[in-house]
Image (cartoon, rainbow, N blue to C red):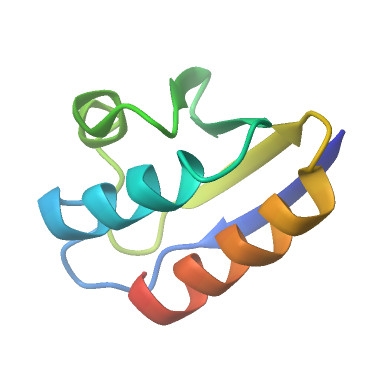
Length: 85
């Protein structure tokens, strides 16, 4: 299992566009990728669940990745977060 924290720097937080990019990227991997914020969790392949977390600018989130290709998934997710959030 891989875990990393990320502080959102996008002024709009996780809205439709970045949620779609996150979900699209997560679907490329067999590993389960979950974002957690304030005790709530969302599986990254579900756009509405991601948006339902209510992640705003400055929020700190935790990303947990578990599965057979977690190394590659972690690298891809870190890149998506760094360039889009």
